[in-house]
Length: 476
Image (cartoon, rainbow, N blue to C red; front, side):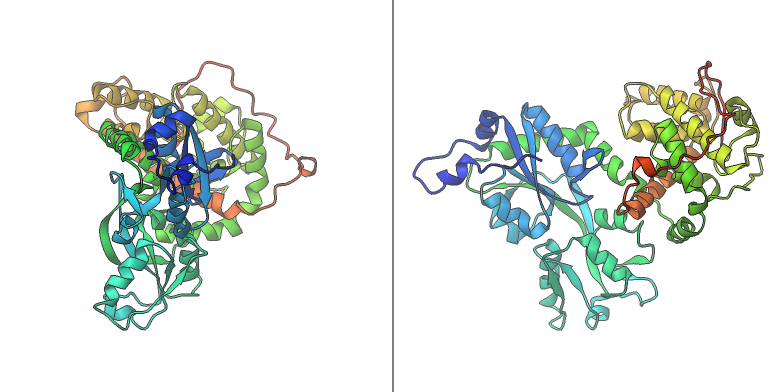
C-alpha cells in the first residue's frame, strides 16, 4: 500500500491563508485520500485484492471524480477521527455512527447505511431482558465508539451500570471473548454481528439498544463543504440507482437468513468429516481453477460431506450429481468421493464459463452456483425477467429477485424453459456463501503448503475436458 503523505491543508491551518476548497485539493493532486478501518465491514486487503463495503464506495467515488484512491488503514475506530483531523486524509470512511461527540471534531455527510446496536450475550448464560439484568455482568466495548456514548447515556438512568473500554480491539474480537466466556456481554452493530455470528453460533442478541443508527462518512471540520457536498450527491445517487443496495448485498446479503444449529454442525463436521476429503477438494480446485473452499462449501450444502448421500430423486454422492450429469462428465461411479468431487468441480467450472462475460465477480460466482443447483437455462430465463423489469441482468441481487418468479404462472409461461422452484437456488447460494465464509475464517491462519510438498491425488481418469456443446443438466 502506498504511504499516505500529509495534506497541504495541514500546514495551512496554522497560517492566515485561506486553504482552497477540499474538493479542489483532491482534483489538483489527483488523489482521494481515505482513512478506514481494517475490518470486514469496512476494508480488507486480502489475497484477491482490496475489498469491503467502504472500499467499494470510496473507489466508486474516486472513479467519479477521476482521481486515484489512496487508502490508509488504522487498527481501531478510536484512531479514525484523530487521523482525519490531523490532516492526513480527505475523508474517513470507516462505518462511523453519527454522534454528538464526534460532531465536535468533524462534519458528517449523508447517511448511507442504518444499523441496529445490539447487546450480545452467549446462549446458556441467561438472556438479559432489561438494563437491570446487566448491572452485575461484565461488559466490554470498543473504546471511542458510539457504543460508549450509549452506555454513558444509560448510566445517567442506571448509575450502577459499569463497563470496560478497550482501544486495542475490534468488535469481532469482543464477540469472540463473549463466545469464549471471557466476558459476559458486548455491544456490536448489526452489520458486524451478522458477519461474525457465522463463526460463533452460540451468540445471541439480548437487546436492541438502538435501531436505525445512521452511518456516514466524516470530513475535516475547518474547510468548505465542497467535497462533502459532492460526496453526498454521489451517495444519494448510488442509493437511488440501486447500486448501494448491490454493495450491501455483496457483503451482507448472505447473512439475512441464518441457522445457528446448522452452523454448529458445520464446524463440527469441518473437524470430523472434511479431513477425509480435503485433499480431493484441494486437487480439484487446482485442476479447475476454483477455490477449494468454495467446492467444499458446495459439497457441504449438497451432502454434508457424506459420500453415501442419496436423495429421494436419485442424486447421490458428495456433490449430489444426477445420473445424467455423471454420464455427461464420464463418471463411472458418482458415489466415489474422488469422482464426485472432481466431477462436481468440473461441472461448476462449466457453469462459470457459461455465465455472460459482462458479469463480474462476485456476481459471476453466485450465478454459477445457482446454475449448478437449478440449471443454467433457468438462469437465462431469470435474466430475461430482470430485463423486462428494468433491472440489471449482470447483478446477482436482481437475479435473486427474479428467480422466485419462475414459480409464478404470470412469469414462467413467458420464458422458454418454464416453471422452476426458483426460491431454492437463492437459498442454495446464500447457504453456500455462509459456509464459504466460515471456511475462509477457519483456514485463514493455516500455513500454505509448499508447491513441492503437494502430493497431487490422482484425478479420475474418466473425467474428460468438456469441449462438446453444452446440454442442460440439473443437480439438486
